[in-house]
Length: 80
Image (cartoon, rainbow, N blue to C red; front, side, top):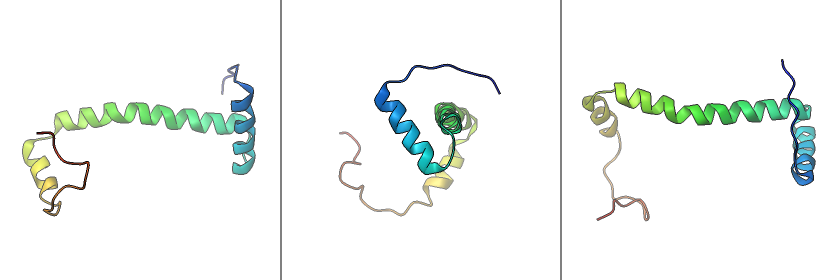
């Protein structure tokens, strides 16, 4: 493990303390988990882009064929 010193607004610090206490972890553990989650989310889009680039059209068609045919939900329509 390595150390990192950060400055937080008082309101964020107070909420961090409360959430860590509720989760029964230290604030450091809470922040480490939050940072790991954010890193995964950040890299997740890149992972999906790489996987999509490796796929074939027939793979997409096979998956889309599993979706029931029905009108899109309101707000999900394709633009004209």
